Length: 491
Length: 99
Image 1: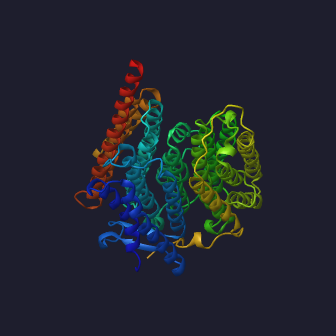
Image 2: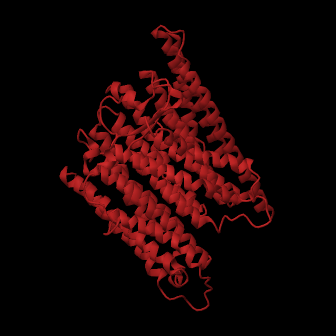
Image 3: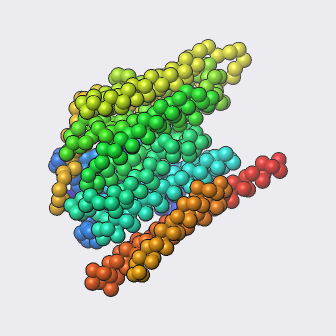
């Protein structure tokens, strides 16, 4: 199929960048990162355009070996959207990291900047692989690559507490992937193949299939950090440097969730309502429990990290709501994916803004934030804009996503879901306004404030504006997200 | 009892022991070892799948073996990363104690 080689480029360009950082005697790893970025962004956008134009998925069979024995890469509407989102966020976050992870002049390479830029590119390649791979085992490898790139980002500063957070993150992620692999083994034992499209045509509604998918979804939930397996997330995401936190919270936890969505809607032959409601109940527990915890945090970055767990909870509400024969034509499916995208932008904006605020004040204690709006006014403004999306106030992507989920809930008379969404919005308003209120207060006498460069503040503003602009998409199921999602046999 | 069933039960046993260790032991090193036990159980299960492929008239199914080799490499890399983090953590905590 034409254009299929673009999929290979999307995986290989960042990976080649990582290899080049080790091989090419160029002074600064960030130069290679910025050399690789524009062509990869162009490739990703070209994929999205090609998918939109042809109205069908792009695919590429590696080495010409057709599945089930060979491996296939495939970009449908949803994965194209995910890849474009990742590329934009990585680019903006990369800009914000230029100062912090700048290789000093006269040094050939410095450990921390080198690690950061190499891992950022490795992470990009792994993310694209998760969005493109069509083979359950390739997806396992992709998730592991993602984990290996994400874990060291947590402990870049090398302090004992961040090392501990990284270790805990790694252990949770490993247990999650071993459960996933157990599910893959069961699927292989039952069907003798692992390709998504091939499995879809033969999947039976029996115990082995249900058990395998339950194990896989369970393992992926530990990686997505939904209640009660979210314990690793707050220390890890709060301990990482701000640009790394932004990438971890915005993108890394979304990849396993994307896979849950694909397993659930593309593979599971009969989606049980009881299981769907259980997923939604865990999501609801995440929203309520972690929003309350976010309200009680003393440090800004921990508060944002707890809010991530709460917002991830919304994603799980889509499962009992998208139950028709063509789930991707329902409001809930579009609403769930919209929540994923808008949360990614909003949360990246919040973490980058929090990093700048902490730089200006020298700490991130919420109670002592007074004066932040003087030192970093645009950052505080961006934080508030991103907060709109988390609360679900218009105009913002979060508003549209939540309205679509609520409409889906009301149509199916699942009232408790609507109530949870509204309660989560109120709690989010609580923790966002708490920060805004403190930050806009006048600083006490004698507090030392270092204003940050306005140019740096453009990044969180741009991210927050992206989250805002998503609020102008029409409130209806998106045809683009359904491209390539046809049931039945895929040639 | 066929060999496939026997190995299947042993795989389940390994996974069970590993899970028990993961839940019961608080120490990171023991958790890592337990993770490796679970991993060994899962790899054995892939071996069982290969053996069952032989039931379809082949002498054995090579695909699960390829998967297991990849899986072992990944699990080894993961364990190495975890041990490296653990060693660094111990080192840093010693430095903190000394100062």
